[in-house]
Length: 301
Ligand SMILES: NC(=O)c1ccc[n+]([C@@H]2O[C@H](COP(=O)([O-])OP(=O)(O)OC[C@H]3O[C@@H](n4cnc5c(N)ncnc54)[C@H](OP(=O)(O)O)[C@@H]3O)[C@@H](O)[C@H]2O)c1
Image (tube, rainbow, N blue to C red; front, side, top):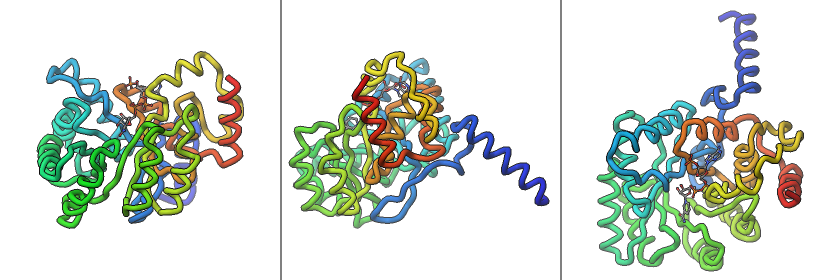
């Protein structure tokens, strides 16, 4: 390619990125580093608490399509859990069909009380996900964390878990969450954070930044409820300055725009939601004053 062709191709890519962020290509994704390793993750991942469907093709086809699109757009982190009914086995089977496991970063959880049960549950998850090792294993809602974390570390030593973390989505757990963060060496925390629920930003997110812990944001849409709150309200004009074309992108860019946030994991079971949400992984993220403006705008709705 000569220089003129290169310039033309670059302009075409830039125009495409400006016009249609989700179609601009994985190489344009905004990525953030996992603090404990420097490994980069695209800022939009996938939450799967609605992937616990039955074995019928009718139930699985839309999820396969959503997973295919997620991969095509460059998505890597998928979060699941034994608590999400059949979600782990549905994911294991669909990912095997799509042949995409090697490109993915699979995060699941443990919620058992004894060391033996934790180990047995992880073996079971490994079989269901068809994955001999996990990219991330998290203690779900801090359940039996004192017992579970040593087992997770053993598996990490053996190379069957790459990263270890804890999760919550309830502010009633924040105090204990903070204690565990201070006591244990964690790679990740996962926590709820959105324009509607900003409690994590008081102490937990700054602490994660201080300790060098990666942050996965769950429920950036409040489980979908936020869309009722914003209703048919138009986006403010200035949202376009940091590349937002939809409320979902406005909400996601707010969440992953927090300096401590590594990745958000919106739940999505539909291809058009995947397309929309990947718009938030393109362009740029809002800075501190733009995020304050987002808060003021949301609060005034
Ligand atoms: N304690 C924990 O560890 C914990 C707790 C809660 C959640 N989580 C994790 O976090 C993930 C996210 O939480 P969540 O799924 O409960 O809530 P969420 O991400 O806040 O909201 C998901 C809802 O938003 C909808 N949605 C997605 N993209 C949209 C778009 N662009 N426009 C309009 N609607 C859109 C989804 O619809 P469709 O499904 O129809 O696409 C779904 O109904 C979970 O899936 C799970 O992996 C972890």
